[in-house]
Length: 59
Image (tube, rainbow, N blue to C red; front, side, top):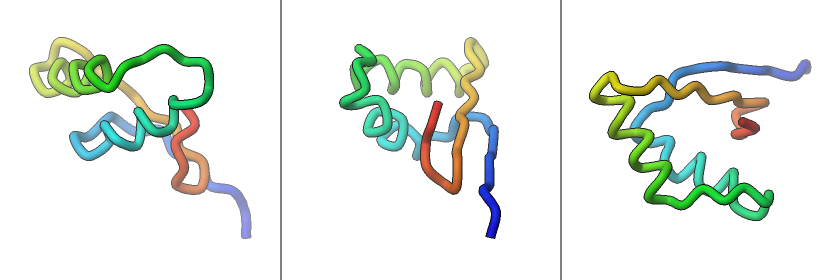
């Protein structure tokens, strides 16, 4: 079975996925920041893409 890489736009249920994925990797993004990104995505002010490898957040 091969590896699966996916690039997709952020969805509302991704806030925890992103925050948890950044935690412990010396990336200083607060949960409030990730939530603000989601709000700005919904309003059209920002577009955030996620990279997933085998369903796991990698960037």
